[in-house]
Image (cartoon, rainbow, N blue to C red; front, side, top):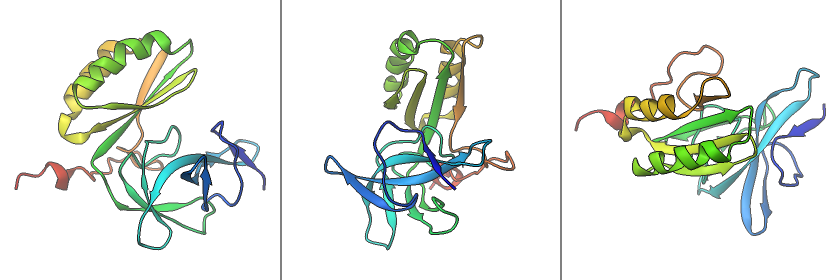
Length: 180
């Protein structure tokens, strides 16, 4: 089975191995399966952790679901490019996709999300990916996104709030938001 990559960074090795590009460590994780059967992988910047095959994400992914910046994951040999979350870092991954150029939307959205402490992790010609700590509040984040993202040409999605297969909330944030 061949692989299709979602990043512009040249890739090599298996989908769960790590590699260094320009001095930065990256891993490839499975982002899905193309209708033609090819595995789609996404290369992510990581910081290796002491536990075997474990990494902290330095940016939220565009297509890999269930994870965000600062999460610690362990890559798995099977399925190829698979992973399990060892620790959630507390960030929400917000993905914005546009049918038209993304520049104007980015200029409106980024300052608003930065005021909440959010960061723009990736800007592509039709996509933006933000990391925002869950303590900022779902309603505050959703208000900004709903007010700023034009529904006729763009859409936004959480990348790590719902289970990719069942659609059920993952609820990883409940212990983080629980009063002490």
